[in-house]
Figure (cartoon, rainbow, N blue to C red):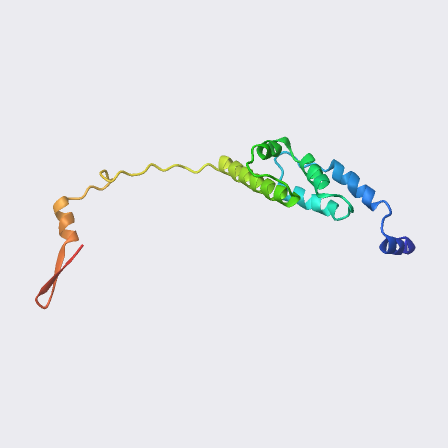
Amino acid sequence: KLFESQLFTLFGDPNEVRKAEAELDSLRMKEGGHVSLYIADFRSLVSRIRDWGERALIHHFRKGLPSSILDKLASHPSRLDSLQDLMDITLELDTRYHERQNEKSHPQEKKPLASKSSSSHPQNSSSSSQKKRRIFRRGTSPILLY
């Protein structure tokens, strides 16, 4: 067992690249899942693969996205020519989606706005104006406070 462990450490899995390619080919993001987790899994697999070009990586990244995100990407105005651009936009769209889902599941109570003319405690206008105006004398100069 120790010998196998040392061999693996020295030489690695001879099928590692093929295994990573197969995993990448079958990697799918769940509908309603989080793009950030999909991106982390995708990058982990890509780090074990050599000699794949940008276009192939973009193809496989898109291939694993759910149709709801692909629909949003189709109507996105930006050109997505790099894998990083595609990941950034996809992450932004997913963040908006989950924020909206959170808003739907926790609707905020709408409080009616009180009108300025109506009040639950009507005030006597003469007493109110008396409270607003108080004249204090300092020496001979009165000061009016509002």
